Image (cartoon, rainbow, N blue to C red; front, side, top):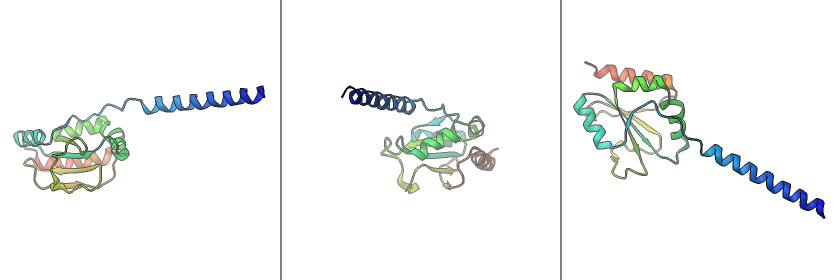
Length: 147
């Protein structure tokens, strides 16, 4: 009987230890982003118009796994951050910003659009989500509007 109790206690302790390790891994802080995002749609659009810079508009959510991967694998990349300085970068959290414009017809997230400085001519980005492809897109779009 003692043997069963000892085995049961050891199994319970092993289970608790595994749960504890999983929680600390889940609570690890996210990597800092290399892109300086404006988190207010209207403010970002006004900045772009005033500065004459094109726009990268990102629709995302905290619960979205693909959004978190995009942040970790692309938006935290220093080279992407450097390329993003030619644009006004706006991040819209679809759960927190209920007034975000519906004109983009976002059906899935993350959704990324490149716009001209006046906010028109939205071009959705549907390519690979790698730093290299984002840099290429940012540079190509930035070149169209540089003076």
